Image (cartoon, rainbow, N blue to C red):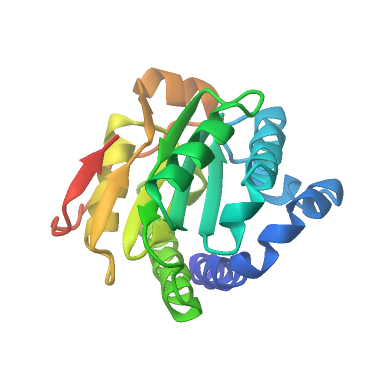
Amino acid sequence: MQKTKLAVAILALATLFPLLQGCVPAIIAGGAVGVMSAHDRRSTGVQADDETTEWKAAQRVPEKFKAFSHLNFTSYNHRVLITGEVPSEEAKNIIGEQTRQVEGVKEVFNEVNIAAASALGNRSNDSYITSKLKARLVDSNQLSANHVKVVTENGVAYLMGIVNDREAKVAIAIARTTDGVRRVVSIMEVVAEADTRRIDSSSVGGARNVPAQTAPVETR
């Protein structure tokens, strides 16, 4: 029962998240980050830095591109993923470079497409796919869903996080077999299992019943 309730909560939060992105600084100030931070492998300081980085990167988008672009900035452990659509290669390159200049950013993954901004319906579908994927991670009992950050853009699922090799394989297998996922891109930081045990309060159990793989996977 508890697992089902958690999965439902994740579904609801993932659906609402696009509406809350502009309120990140206020949410941090209100202390909401503390709800999930206890099970995050990043320190609370790094979590706050990542949230601030996302906001700063969004503010650096030149005005001349904003009206014709749809952009998402996701920072995890000082590594920034940029997704969405921009009108030109010039816009993509400039936005990527501006993001690299944000203080504290260690690496940038510029996955922006040169295309018209996606429709609201497409974005809602991406949010729904993310929620399904996160719920499946919870239901798997093979790793903590808090250790994997999922971003879906136009049916492409990007996976971020600090995981060991076993956890990475489980997360990728679940993502590949989630309905609606066209492709999986892994930009997870894969570390030794001894390192994840040291970070966690207890070791993660062994993988069980890994789903059959279907969607192609790319590793950045």
